[in-house]
Image (tube, rainbow, N blue to C red; front, side, top):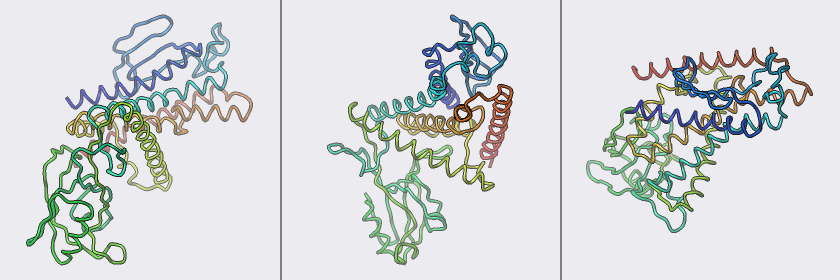
Amino acid sequence: MTILIFLIILGLLILSHEFGHFFVAKRSGARVDEFGLGFPPRLISWRRGETTYSLNLIPFGGFVKIYGEDPNEESLTGTDRQRAFSAQSKWVQTSILVAGVTANLVLAWLLLVVAFATTGLPTQADSVPQGYTLDNPRVTIIQVAPNSPAAVAELILGDQIVKLRTTTDYLTEPTIESIQDFITNHSNSEIIVSYIRTHGPNIKPTIAERAVKPANIGPEGKLAIGVGLETIGILQLPLHRAIIAGTQSTWHLVSSTVTAFGSLLISFFRGQSEVLGQITGPVGLVGLVGDASALGFGYLLLFTALISINLAVLNLLPIPALDGGRLLFLLIERIKGRAIKPQVANAVNLTGFLLLMILMLLVTYSDIMKFFA
């Protein structure tokens, strides 16, 4: 069932992205030769008008084949050359390339709006609109300091604290303030933290415990266990408020994703070996989809929206064979005042595609090794 859900999500993301290219290309008058889900070899195909629609064997991708996107002799000099991608204005070419990313962002926004309006989504207490309340609010760990008592005890981001106790005292229904006071008042005691972990490989949300000994690591030597805390609960909104919250959440996720990609690229160019371990491929995503679906429909929508945003940002990177690489070519042509030689553009795009396939294989291998670790 998890694999089926993953394939449905993957198909939805690819379909929306490629439909963006397809729709704008059709509207602009460019000739679209094929709209494909997955990569060849073909399983089934049918033709409608001038376009072939295909379902292909390799499910991890999709494509829209626009006439003249990879220029050749026919698209440059043939009878239908005016409808080739390369014959369109730079503005039209840019619009076609950006349309896929735009479609993924719109899909993410729609998913977040639906989630807020139906099941609700996890939200910090200080972000709740006036007049609305959180369902089942809990103090949640949002940061763990390296080498802190909490890190040694293997507490992680997202753990929800439900109780603290020592041999002589206990704290139920904790708030951020009462947790801080409890730690300060039991500086010489080992504190048992009861928490609920709702994410991770094969997680079934149940109450677990970890022993933590406070240390002088807080501001000005204040006793602490090394965690940042926020009160987080489920926020469900009427449609008009869900639209606003979905827009805000989309913007927040986009900015966070751009920052994360930037950090990843900096690490890569610095030659840091752990970069590959920070990337999750199709195999790893299957497990994450299973975790999200186990938490509920709202979490699955949120996860799908996050992947859609990641796909949008990834495609804007200036890497050959990606939309961002083709946009970079358009910018170079605009600056030079003439087109890049087709042989050069095609060779660079093919090289970029092959490198991306190699990267996907490496990431898939890394995912499999994590699974058996």
